[in-house]
Image 1: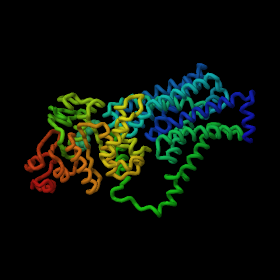
Image 2: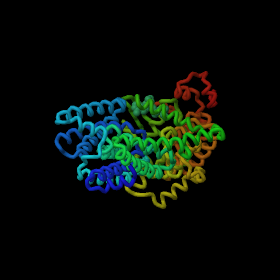
Image 3: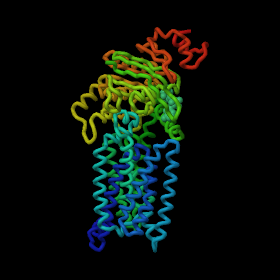
Image 4: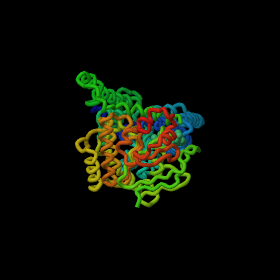
Length: 312
Length: 247
Ligand SMILES: Nc1ncnc2c1ncn2[C@@H]1O[C@H](COP(=O)(O)OP(=O)(O)O)[C@@H](O)[C@H]1O
Ligand SMILES: [Mg+2]
């Protein structure tokens, strides 16, 4: 299908769901791209993963009660994010195992709830893999408004989030409310996940959060640039992915994620400074760092510290 | 007014006593070395001074007032591995991040903030690298970035946690000189270190700590081998004693 055909279909009033799906996919990809930068830089992909699974019972309840899926998912997701933030303060239990316990339990609960609704297997597939049909108008506004709120909060709290990412102890010593900033960030991640569920689906939403931000990280060493590139990559992937999905009749969520992954692979190979090809090509010309330039000593220690922090 | 006045400080962590009866005073102009084996409670003492942990008893006064995060004029330089060095951020922005609390929620850095950043970078001689990503710095340069970040608040007290660990001798000497001059300019500097020789050389005072303060005095006055043996739990044949010239 040519681009003109796609545009014609977008403007066709009989296919009104198509521009709506496109708007939601692009908006949620942009929001996920921005929020995903913190997720990637803080290495907290597991939070996104946990939340993505935990929103499922919320969706199921909303589905059974015929309420808004976005709202149902948001309530369940935020509750989970808060529980994780509070429980992970208790260092005796390893963070991942706490999250693992919640994650599986929540998913199981969702399956049990949704199985109570008649004809659930079709809707189950829709939740898990995303769909472009059947999106109510009110969700369009809900996603638009939530997206704006998320982006405004990111803009307002950016320097605090950065300070906490850089060095928690220092952030505490400056009097920043580190625990509350964590909670706000977790909730923002949750909301970004929830507004993306419609089109991308429960299983693949994590990719929307991580892949564009990770690709952007490969392309730049500047946070400001990264936070513009990631939503650009995400938004473009959504647009191209929806076009391809419509043309070749492939599942929309999977296609969008594959397009974003292609961008990531291209960045990984070709990035100007960190790309694989550039490093290969440059390696013989570059000397080993001098004694004073041990770039790995700190990271080694940091990794060791991460490992001990996890078990203690 | 004393820059720092710690009275009878007791700290427990995880239900176990870590610090007992710690009394420590610091005046401006002093460069004090805090020495002790691993697990002696050095980092814990710094965190207690910053009021980051609950104390069991005693008090910490900074410029005569109880220490409070974000309120007291303390510059903190944590161990280098506490910092996320692979974060995509420039030297200058990192130093500015030290003022995040001062700038305040929902506000952007102003002229005064950028001036403080410029002064701090000048002070540690990193102005030329201000735009460089921190990931591309050497260990010594990284240490200086962290010092500049602390200096961006124009603190009267500077707390340094193991600034020499993992650095080669020339870099250590450069940093030693920097810390000595930061103290001479009228700051009170407290530094933990495992580098006993450097501490004997450059510190105006040494505090030997192991759960409690075992000795406190000028390097040349700490001639009693017994206090070193007690602090570090070593025998009288230990080469450590030769290192600090008491055997
Ligand atoms: N969060 C914590 N919970 C329980 N014990 C701790 C904690 N942090 C440190 N400790 C204990 O306190 C003691 C002092 O630690 P620390 O101040 O880091 O020593 P140093 O910096 O002198 O090597 C150690 O025995 C350590 O195991
Ligand atoms: Mg320590």
